Length: 201
Image 1 (cartoon, rainbow, N blue to C red):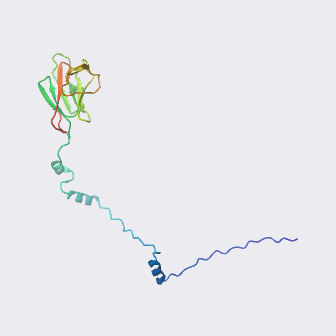
Image 2: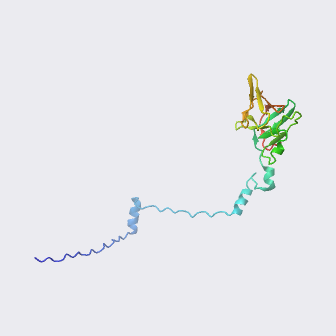
Image 3: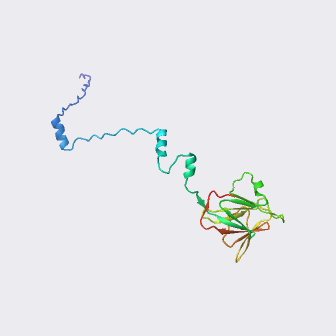
């Protein structure tokens, strides 16, 4: 029996069927909602130049750009919590922000970094150059800390035993409290309202 080799027939590629759509066909398809709507996207708007932006902002009322005019028309200074420090029951200092108290705190901190630097007389030689540091908490409370002094800091509160403050640890001073340090006393009285942030000592 003779077997003839099998030959595969090559299939011809299917030819695409071209449909001719007339205007009438398009009208019928439009009536039936079978035509997709073409959405035209508008071109992007041209970007404004830097000079044009400056000119536009400069024309806005009460919104000057930089310079002397901006300084004159700037709004009121920001405000923050403050207190009146009563030193030795006679000297009164309004403070806001952080500060240092001692025999000569400015020489111990020549780089600054504090809003107030208060130097006190030291006839009995009990004060350290920087004896006490003070400031305000986020909620406006007044605090003090012993800045590593030689003779320490005490807090006296009515009805409570005297407390010796731990160095570098903040302690809140309430109205009526008395802070005793280096032969001096300090009381903090609240300020009615807020103090301008620009206040410094």
